[in-house]
Image (cartoon, rainbow, N blue to C red; front, side, top):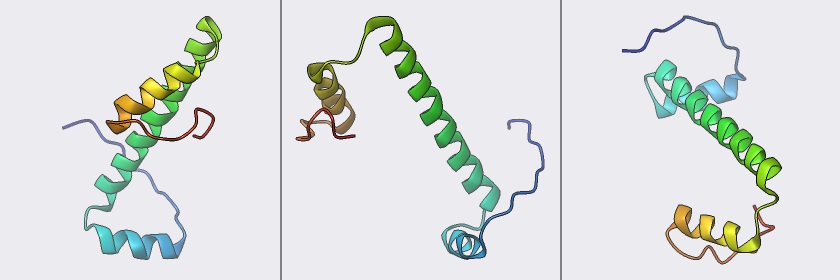
Length: 81
């Protein structure tokens, strides 16, 4: 098991109510949400760095990426994100 640190987090009461309806492991749920957000931000930084080094993604590159992510042509325009 990964090392853990105990912290206090303040959330709006309505969010806590809904969260408790979803899980009895609030710490685990919040840890997964934080991990997902960290991955999202790190990926965004990597993509930004790639564009700075190699130029903006083309419409074709974006379409290919969407197809790989969603398993088929996403049908949306390259500017829709």
